[in-house]
Length: 439
Image (cartoon, rainbow, N blue to C red; front, side, top):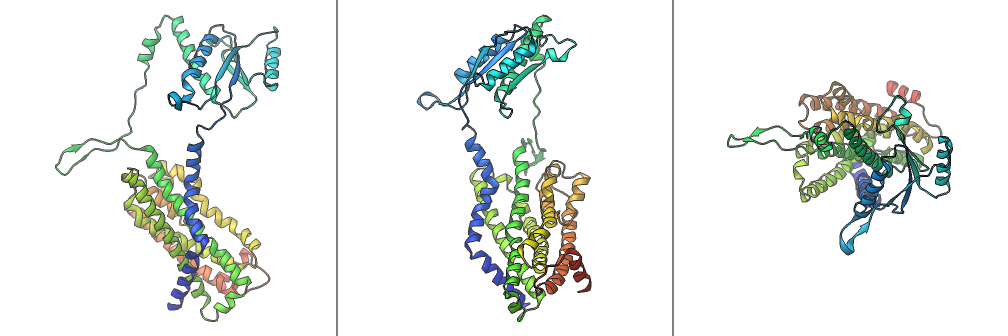
């Protein structure tokens, strides 16, 4: 046992004392939250060049409404701030009435398309003649938006709101209905997303608080992503470490003092310590950051110990597999080929996390969270969604993961013992299975 501890301490110190460890500690929050920060920073940094749009109104009743709405938007809706701090953050929509130079509709559309290609206009809109009063032909009752930039949808979305609003008003007027009366009668009823009422210490019924939908989604996702990133940063380098020690014949020297199983188990315990160090740093940082921001009630304090437990078991499980791969190959190219199926197991929870977080108590969610390779991530995900899960489920998950981890460590130990001293030729999956069964 003492030798295993010595190897574990050596692996731990070798990992945490490197610059790469410090960089990974700093880089992980950038990877996890950098996209949100960048998107927020770039939200109003868009092309503010004027967009000239030609409108062909075949009803003869909607062009003026579109032009007037665009004028109001250009005066008030595209700026942020007041006075000298006023800044243009959206492009102006310059509306012009399209001219019809031919009785052939196809010819008209072609001419307008040529104007777009020649950069005379940005796009054009054709309002069908039956938009206000639809007939039997649906093509005559639609609005067609044509552009050469299909990914830009700001004008399309804005125009859809304007045209639908004024088209409805014209339809109401056609049947002698006051638009204000119809709007009041069809006003949507707001539905509040509330929690449950409870009794306080004095026995009084407290009012239900409104649920924060974003927080209820982000907290479980954050815990799962943190576990995933820690597994990848701490466990996957174990494979490269074993391959390098094998190629440089360092393993032969080490095996003069410890057995192959002691060497592998020591390495595993070392990376478990590395992973727990990283998780502690991030959890403590998240705790203080969330409390400073005033959202301390959303920090899942009751799940910290479950997270630590599942995190350690996930690192042991996947670390043993990575160590076995490293011991069975002769170079990094062969290792990368064997990594593909393992990586599929690691990222599998990412494919189903949204369905699980929406319905954490569904049968499919329970079954998927009890599949041992996915249990650590999916179980902590389900536990973080109010009101949580029955206690027997995480306990059963822990048991299944422990059994699976013991099997993986045992199998990896046999592969490690045979493969660590092999040189020149890597093993395939069939040979690795024979090493596990025959020892």
